[in-house]
Amino acid sequence: MSREDPEMSFSEIGLIELDPSQVKALLDSGEAVLVDVREDDEFAEEHIEGSVLYPMSDFEIETWPNFPDRKIVISCLGGVRSAAVARKLISAGQGWAVHLKGGLNAWRDAGLPTVTGV
Image 1: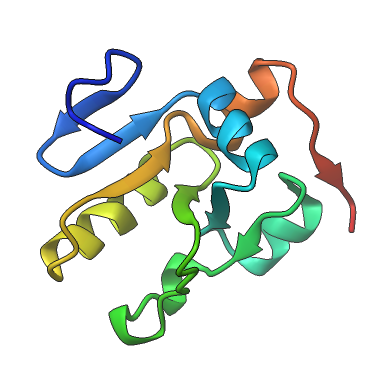
Image 2: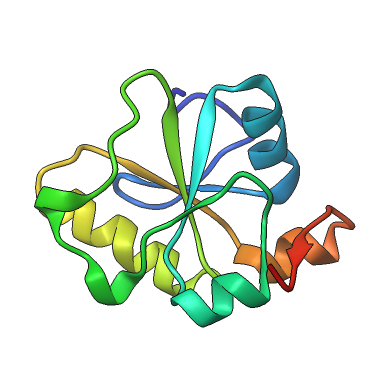
C-alpha cells in the first residue's frame, strides 16, 4: 500500500482507512486478516466471517496479534474503537495501521455477509 494509491484514505498520518469493498478484496485474496476490537458479547452477536477477536479493553502492544504474512485490518462496530486502536499502535511505534472505515455497520450497509448468533 502506498500513499499514491487513490483508493485509500489517509485521515491522519499513518492511519489508513479502507472501505468495506477494499477490505473484502484483501480478505478474499488472503492478503489480510481482520481483527475485531469489540467485546466478546458483541462479537458473539454478530461479526465478519474469519475475523479474529481482540477486545480493545484487553489492548496491550506486547500481546497484539501478529500475522507475519498478512496485513492486519482493524474493525469494530462503527469505526471509532478501531481507529483508536490504530492510533495506539502508531503511537507505540508501528509506522501505520489500517482500519475498516465505518466498521461492521458500513460492512452491513454495503450488503456484505456477517455471521450472527455464534
